[in-house]
Image (cartoon, rainbow, N blue to C red; front, side):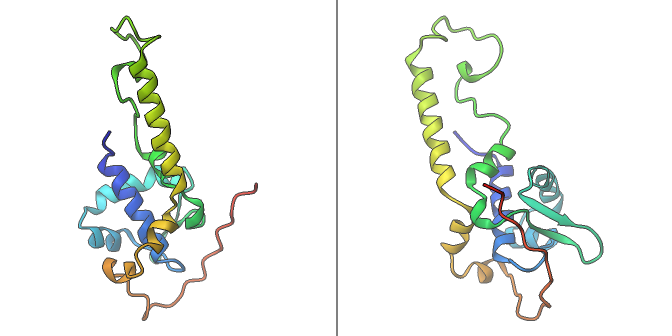
Length: 161
């Protein structure tokens, strides 16, 4: 299984926003930090915004911020929004399947178990975990908040239990 570039950069965008906590992140800055086109990031931003993983602030001084706390966004949350399919074999796909063993195949069961284990591991890791694992992340991404005025961003509320 291979994740798409969209998923890869969605995680990176969320990491940037988490590292830049308290400030609005701007797409040109994120694009420059990762060496990717702004257009590509804008395309990724839409599903993340729709899923509530990010919030956008419009206007001249606008930008992007996390839609909820970084420790409440798992890798699985991101991947289920950005990946189109988790079909590991033909028997995972909807529609006509040519294999006569589709309903009683051991391969199908093994792949499904592996996929569920993959999802379980992704659920264990949050964006916050990834950012905290790199103490110099702000330096590595070129985030310099020393001379920036802190923006009064509304606190992102944790979802009700």
